[in-house]
Image (cartoon, rainbow, N blue to C red; front, side, top):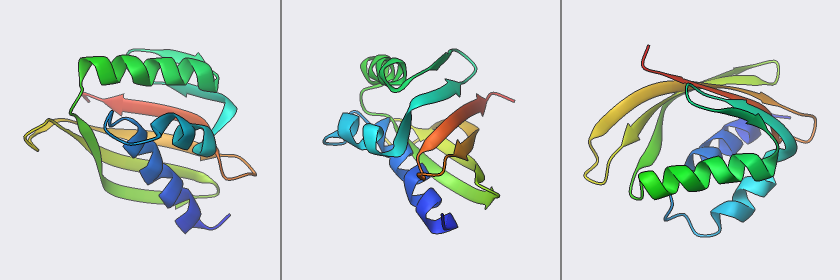
Length: 117
């Protein structure tokens, strides 16, 4: 898979965390493998359904927050993306990074988020 495809997938993943994104659950199902493994500084788990629940909880707690990618790089089917979490006014409230692995289909199979370092 071309790097540009993975970058588009990564950017789409950022959009599903915005509760105002129409059809975000369908978009998530298109870009994340059903058996994905995910972790961050608060939770870890496996499976698309479980990840959907994590994102729903984020939406409830942060209804107008959005993630903005500040840098993206890729090698050998893995990516490292740096991001800002913006509040409803566009102010940066957190910065962090995601390490992501992509499967043969181009979907995300592993996502690890880091922040507060």
